[in-house]
Image (cartoon, rainbow, N blue to C red; front, side, top):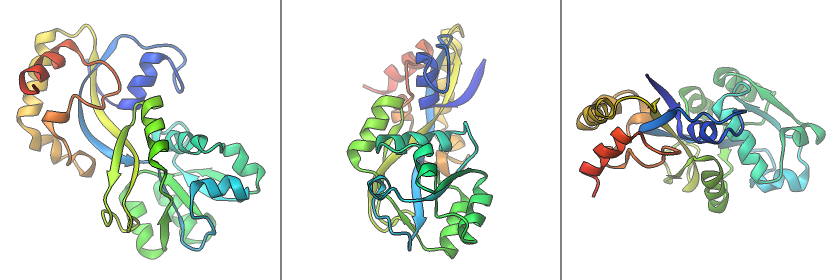
Length: 241
């Protein structure tokens, strides 16, 4: 009756777009429960690339890592590069490669000199990597982030200078809102009470981990990727004027 998902997967599912083949009309969003910074493009400081667009201009043989195929970080990496007219196949044609692996193995490959960078989200293994290898963040332009938000249902996240070891400068990136979804035929009263219970005890969600510390009941109806269940919609009308 309930599940955890991500805003852009919900949007793609409703529309029957990649990675889905047919529309999924029987689900509705309940609320957002936190957002992670996604499609962070980190490369070694000594790699002669300063902007994402340089990769295509130089046809640079980049040795790139990301997470397993069909995972949301890998999907975010593919979509980000596509905005710059770059495909994974292009990278291979230019003499580079794309390795789909775990965060831990990606960090090891970069540390050992077998890879140049990673496009993924922020996790402890990557934080540890930046402690031993100097990495720089290739910041996407704001218009690129906005395009990804419009097309796929991501959030638009602002990373303040100094938030991470690798972000001495501020910049924009896409966010990946975590959401609760439910069946469209779930009784309105049940979903109303569920939403109310969650929003009245926000610290329960915030204590789940780093990606949930930003949970805000007043904003939990935004960035969900599609329509809310009528029960959730009714609850939010009582607190958001």
